Amino acid sequence: IVTCGNGVVTALQARKAMISRIEMELDVIDCPYLSDVPIGLKEVIGQYKGVLFADICKEGPGSNVLSPMISQLKAENSLPNNWEFVAAPRTYNPLGNTITFLSQEDIIDAFGRIVARDGASNDETGSHKLETQAAV
Image (cartoon, rainbow, N blue to C red; front, side, top):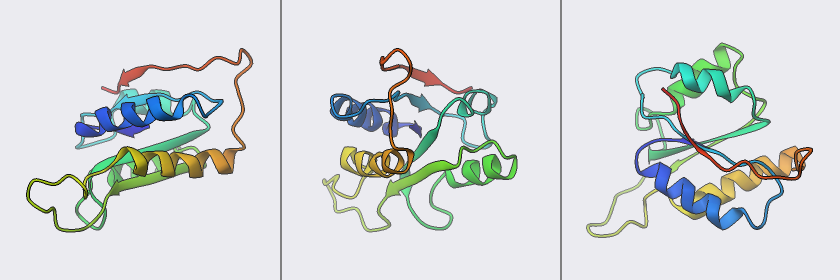
């Protein structure tokens, strides 16, 4: 799960909720450098069968920060074939309410689509690699 800012906490919560239900590796990559694709992300993204980009910003043109990264990774042929993008809904935020923010459930649903396409399997050891990485 590639994300940034508050998305890291939300992704970690989603990972915690999913870990008992999945049989695969699941890392959260904190990607705070938003003006370009971080070199660290380029170096690690190829090791994954699937990648979920979880953007805390609103979905839609000009609103989210991870879409340009996805485009650049695709143009450089660095993006795995199995990927998803999820963002906060493009809507008004009611004062004092977080219902329109990117949620743990949004991430779980999007990750489920990756798993469904992949046919999800354990690695050779049957272990789960659970780390938070910083892509710098």
